[in-house]
Image (cartoon, rainbow, N blue to C red):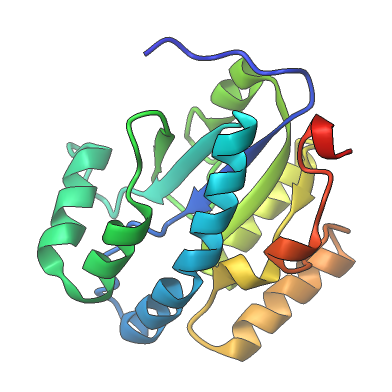
Length: 193
């Protein structure tokens, strides 16, 4: 599929690391939190679909250097549990974009910045897991690249509430990005401005 062009200053929804086996220490707790935020992320995804705005899944490759995004989706679906529940609710659709990443930030050693430029995106809505790791690293890298940011607090999760609270505090204070609930923020798209 050829990259689509969006209006200058377009907004993209980034869904970070939700396609995940949760097979690490603390993974069961994080998986439960990921399942809990799925409905709110799905609601945002519907808003982006209605506005014709891009949805981009950015996911860790979990050191499977020869795999594709579809391999990860199939592995999570087959695993069942939290991994399977998330795939059922938030699996990438054919018109979504997807990027595999090797480390915490969605920008590090990935084509994400090139994709965003091709789409004309200047504002990112970051959702997913983990707020205190991959979401925070991606938010910091986005801020350094001068993207406008919004990290809805009810669309991110961490292993513990304290970790999530601390990460969102950094996003709000240091990056000056809104962390309001998904339903509280307007102006995502030009028609709402």
